[in-house]
Amino acid sequence: MKIEFNFEFGIYNGSMSVTINQGEHKLFESINNTQKNLTAIIDLTSPGTLTIQLDGKNNNVDTNVDSRGNIVADKYVQLQKLIVGRVPVSNANLYNLCCYTTITGTQVNDTYWGWNGKVCINFDHINPVLWHAHNNPKHVIG
Image (cartoon, rainbow, N blue to C red):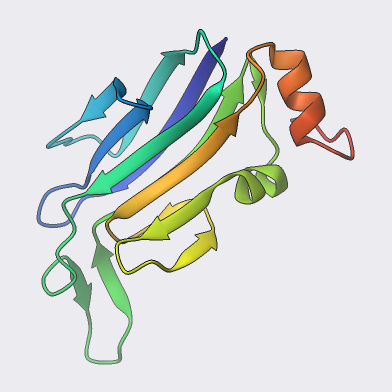
């Protein structure tokens, strides 16, 4: 089953690294990325959980804040789009699928990742039709 991740990078003092693993198997890695947008295509051959490992953020220097407290530049990764078997996952379902755990243990469902941590997405079916049916309970696809 083909899975396509479309990432946006906030590049400030470099970029965060992204590694996608299934268990102990590394499926994709981006280190020292200089592109604002990056696509990772994974060919998943067995069911399981994909872990997106996020590293390289120093919270003391990798966010630029102006005198009013507004963030003017930040190092981050955002999942813009997830396509499973050539069918995009809706934004509402995308948030629910992405369980983001920061290195401090805070867990949120979000696609904007501005801290080191990991995101787990369950792919319990490698048939894209079954996966979409299972993960879109209201049959909202796309």
